[in-house]
Structures are given as C-alpha cells and as structure tokens.
Image 1 (cartoon, rainbow, N blue to C red):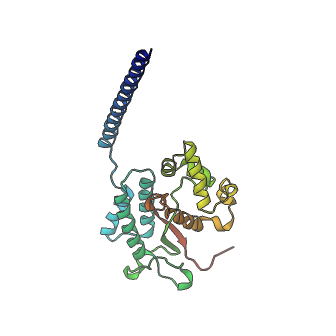
Image 2 (image 1 turned 45 degrees about the vertical axis):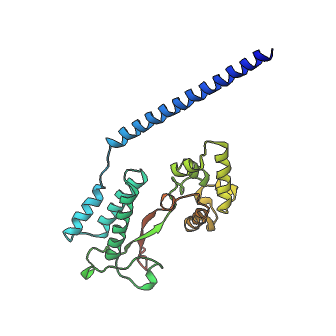
Image 3 (image 1 turned 90 degrees about the vertical axis):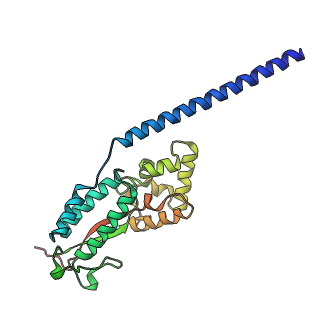
Length: 242
C-alpha cells in the first residue's frame, strides 16, 4: 500500500512539473509572438511632424509668421501628442519652440492686462506678427480624456495611462482608484459629478495641483499626466457693446 501511494505521489509531481513546463513554454511563445506583432506594427507605420508646424516654420523663415499661424501649429502638435502619433521627445522640443515663438509674438500690453507668469510680449520690430487682443499662454493641464465634459471618475477610467497604471479592470485596480481620489482630497460624490457641477475649488487649476500632490507617491509620471498645453487669452481691457 505504501509503495502504491509513493508511486501515485511521484506521478502527480511529474504531471505538475510537466504542466508547469508547458505553461512556461506557452507563455514564452505568446510573448515572442506579441513582440513580433508589435515590431511589425511600429516598423511599418510612421508619423512625421505636423504639417501645420512645418507650415509655421516655413512662414517664420520667410518673416511671415503671426499668432494665428502659431495657434494652428499648436493644434497640429497637440493632436499628434494626444493620439500618440509622435514620441515624447519630439513633443517636448516642439513645445519649447512654440513657447519661444509665442513670447516673441504676443502683443505688449499694460501690466494690468497681463496675467502673472505669462510669457513676454512681442520682441518683433513694430509688433509684427501680433494679433490685436490675442495672447497665447502656456500652462500645465490634466491629460485626462474629456474631463471637462465627463465626470472625473469616467475620465480616469477611460484615459489609457491611468487605466493601465492603476489596472482598473481588476478588483485591486478599483481600490487603487478609490485611494487615488482620496489622496487628491476628492469626495466620491464630487468625483461622480459633471465637471461643470464641481465646486469652485475643484476646477482646472486646483485639479492640476491635486494631481501634482499625487505624484509624490509615484502614481503618475509628470509628462504623461500633466503635459504642457496652450490657451488663447483675450487681452482687450474694455468690451464693445451695442
């Protein structure tokens, strides 16, 4: 009897060992196939620089640049970045170039008309390239999908970076999301409200600050979740009404 039990135990161990080997082999083959598919996908697809950006650079070299053309370039670059069509390194260099150009082209105005921290006014002779009443300013913004149109929870769930980082398809991922909201100081009830329904203190600027606080515990990479973005600002001091 004892010999039979020993033999059965040995067979069971052998089976488990063989199953483990087969599973590891299948996993290795799956990873190799995945690498092959990803390589072929990236090898034969490529996006160049935004045509709007190239057009602006051409206008700049011909001394025909202005803020309106620069704004079109910004739209082109941001579109490529949001859709993951260009590497982060290219996006960073384009942003730095745009910031310098905006600093040159922004119209000069009285201190009472400019926001703190805004870029320098036009250094172009005679203010050439400036558009009256228009400024372009750079700021950090939350790279969360449609967060100004959805609820914060919905945006976090549908943003690829946060969904993958937190593994929101798992039970632990849901727990991480709850912890994330808690670290931001965001009540669950407010996180389920439309952005326009937020209390004043939770609007964009403070939302960015809340996310910066989260980065201290390494939830997000800086550029992935808080990239530089641009906005246009109306600098007219007085409005004309009928």
